[in-house]
Amino acid sequence: MTDNTIQTVSITLPLEQSDDVEAWKSAAANALSVSKIDDIRLRKHSIDARRAQIKVQLRVEVSVSGELPPERAYEPDYPTVPNGAKRLVIVGMGPAGLFAALRAIELGWRPILLERGKDAIAGRFDLAPILREGRVIEDSNYYFGEGGAGTYSDGKLYTRATKRGPVRKVYETFVEHGAPNRILIDSHPHIGSNLLPNVIRSLRETILNCGGEAHFESKVTGLIRSADGKRIQGVIANGQNEIVGDAVILATGHSARDVYRLLRDEQIRIEQKPFAVGVRIEHPQPLIDSIQYSYKRKGSRHPLLPAASYSLATKIGDRGVHSFCMCPGGFVVPSATENDEVVVNGMSLARRDSPFANSGFVVSVEPEDTESLQSEHGALAGIAFQKELERVASAAGGGQQKAPAQRMRDFLKERDSSDLPETSYFPGLTPAPIHDLLPKEIAVRIQKGLRQFGKSMNGYVTQEANLIGFETRTSSPVRIPRDPETLAHPEVERLYPCGEGAGFAGGIVSAALDGMRCAEAATKQS
Image (cartoon, rainbow, N blue to C red; front, top):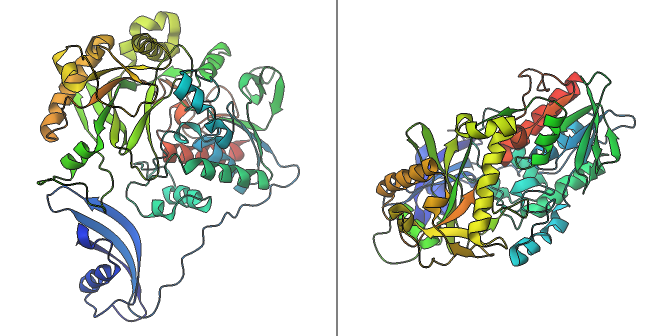
């Protein structure tokens, strides 16, 4: 390496030195066989806790002669939509809808965003009734409202969808709008439900400042179609307001069940797809820390270590069993969208400093598993399956969003729990036989999965863990088909199914990427 050269290098340091810039410089100098490093900047950070001696892997940018050039400022730079621009109607203001709107602006179209819930800041106040009174506001809750399900249920950004599009652009867009720069560095980036609402609000302000529109409490109740029904021309909101456009993107999320019913009633083809259901498991966070960080002695987690997480997956018979949406230092939250159901999910704040760790623990459900419901519900049989479980959970919990729960070892031995460990679930837990409440084939697979994972994570199977019912909204049980080339519905021109609700994404980043792709397709074809 010669003077005045800027280079990126990967280094590995002991945990205790991982926050020491001088240690970074020394390790980088050794890696590059130079005498010294003048300036250094962190680019990537990940923890390797596979051995008792925890290491930290860093990717750093270095200069051996002088300072590194200043970092590019992340500032929104979108054009103003011209007068007379074509109109892209976007149903849903989750990540798919918001990023579709931003991409539409870049392409010179005017996005018209419709959201059944409230804006992200106002929507926060609608969580109080479900937490304190057990009363669900059915169009404004953990799943419905600006930002979608991720706004108040964690904001995890980790994705494996790196081949679907510009993941880095998604991260940078969040940073441009107020997310911490750290998400550009961490191997498993996370914003947190206390920070994400303001980021979402900033995204909306950019859209409005560029000439887009955002309409809250605007629930789509009908479609406007051409006389022959083959082309979408707009939507009807709240039973009366007609919103017309040159194309429509459906980005409604996986819990907008009324939209699936609307499509069915409009004889627009929808299909069943696999999904997963199960429980949410809650452990004491120090226990998960001790397992994952291989504590050999008494003491607490090192201050440079984050709350530990885990990811588990196996196959029991012909069905997948896996952890889902693991929330270290998090909370279990009530995520029902109607008052006759109990649904649980997990979230974390930015600091992840809750004394609890929770994760979904679910079993895959294939269309053939809902065969008994298909004669009555057709393509909505998976939704009917979810709904049955959610009603069972509501009845077993005793109302007011109390959730049924069972200690882990009691679940494995199929015995009642006389009491339950402490929980982060605010409405409260009711002891209940989860092993009997779940469909037998799902309960048995969870039991076998827990026993298997207990061998690889010594201490994971414990009487101090709660199994809380039920985790049912891991993904949509319905797919809205689309042409693989045009991304439009194969039978309705200019209708673009998008994101998680259409069955083409799973998580914030993949939904955002799909929103961008659908905006590009809509503006190209229309």
